[in-house]
Amino acid sequence: MSHPRSYRLSFVLISVALCLALVLNISSGSVSIPFSATLSGLMGKPLEVSSWEYILWDYRIPKALTALLVGGGLSLSGLLMQTLFRNPLAGPFVLGISSGASLGAALLLMGTSFISSFASLSFVGDVSLTIAASLGSFLVLAVVLTVAQRIRDTMALLVIGLMFGSITSALVSVLAYFTSAESLQRFIFWSFGSVGNLSTQQLSLLTGIVFLGVLLCILSIKALNAFLLGEHYAQSLGVSLKKSRWIIIIAAGLLAGGITAFAGPIVFIGLAVPHLTRQIFDTMEHRVLVPAVFLYGAILMLLCDTLAQLPNSVNVLPINAITSLVGAPVVIWLLVRKRKMIF
Amino acid sequence: METVEEHILSTKELAIGYGAKVVAEHINFSLEAGTLCGIVGANGIGKSTLLRTLAGFQSKLGGRIDIKGKALEDHSPSEMAQKLSVVLTEPPASKNLTVQELIALGRQPYTNWLGSLTASDKEHINQSINAFLLNDLRNAKCHELSDGQLQRVLIARAMAQDTPLILLDEPTTHLDLYHKVQILKLLQQLAHESKKTIVFTTHEIDLAIQLCDKTLILDGVNNPFGAPCELIEQHHFERLFPSEMIQFDAKTGTFKVNK
Image 1 (tube, rainbow over the protein chains, first blue to last red):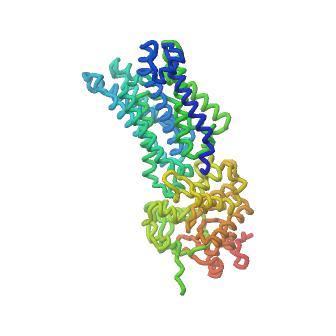
Image 2: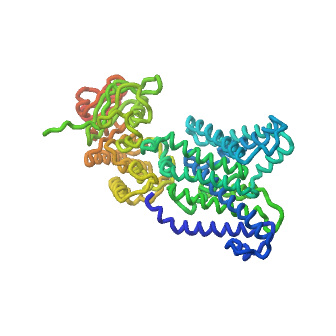
Image 3: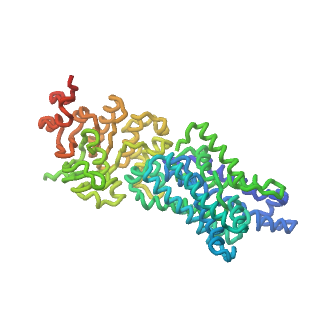
């Protein structure tokens, strides 16, 4: 933990890559806007076609920012869980946290119409969706953590996480069976995952949540490093276990839950990015990993979203399909090449 | 002027166990600075339980534990971290840490909220690395180390934590005789030269007799405590194991199997 400075070059490179990914993401989309026009638009110059300006500022830039926050936040949440559970395969999706968020969202989107079919859908606001999804993810995270303290076996923990995923998706199907067609459709679209179509208000709410999650994460850096030795060692180093554990859980839950509420359950980013980051930043020091994982996750998400756009086509693929296609092979490759993912 | 030697660690009528189940009781001993103390006893008698209780990982069932004259339970987590460091049987959770990174974690009780190392922290880390002959392994990852090397790294981390008291749970298991002696010699050196009080549990009774300043024989009833030669004279080691199987030879301080 003595030379965080030696990663300065890597940080410069990864920041440049992030800028490139941002510009690439903004310059591509269903409407073809010349690259030079995108650049001058970003500089604040007026564009020759006024609709371009609208597309750029009201659609593409908010979408790019959302992708950045979603990718960075989910990856950070994955890093927190991997350290907290001392398990290289932990992540928001694997541990059932995303399923918990889905359950929360499903209860709100479909449960309200199930309980009171006369309630209009507009009743379901963005804030309540965020709260519901976050609560769902906290709930699952807390249960998984309680079980994890009884069962030290990490494989058992992953199986339990998968089982929670099954239970929540079963509950979601039950809800889906009884709900109205519109609610179901809304839920299905939400579950495909998307980083587009966020209003300014929604985007600022998401920014606030991610900011809070990142802040808690930064405050936990020292405890996270101590957790690398195991809980008893962390305790002997003066870490107050209960407090630190809860701060880390709240940070991970806020990030995973809040992001899932707005962008849907996005898979693999949280699991794969911390491992990909360690390929460049070969350290376990969280002072390096926290910023690096956030930047890497943002880049990957921007690239996945760019791919999902299918340049110059009106079709947009579900972002989940892209992150799976990118993320799953990465995990397999890591397992095969490194034999086991050393955490 | 003579000052009363301060006890670093002392227990009085300590009872240990889990919940309502008492594993061992009437544990009385006290240790001064610079003492190497071995805790010996048969399997399952509660050596690890005692160590975990002394470290504050589990609560005692009765009696008292004092660290430098202050009751264990009155310490805040950060106070504890500056008085007591541990080496446990469980391996570090992440084997991806380098030797230097792992040892540097020992400085956490002294670093700021972000864990930045000061010049004095780095000095302590370098001292520990040199004392445990780890200079060549500085940048090796923990999963690349042998058992003996990893054990040295973990003890070096405890040394870097710079606490008056160090507790070790079976530091010599899984090691061959040479590495067992090496580890215990290093602990003896650390105790005598740096005036640390070091307590460890072990099954190597003959080595403990040769190297320790004090020995606690945990039998769950009387728990004799004293210098190894005193305990030999009082025939305490003979009672450790069933005599029809194993005999203790007081002259050599070793156990012999009955033929």
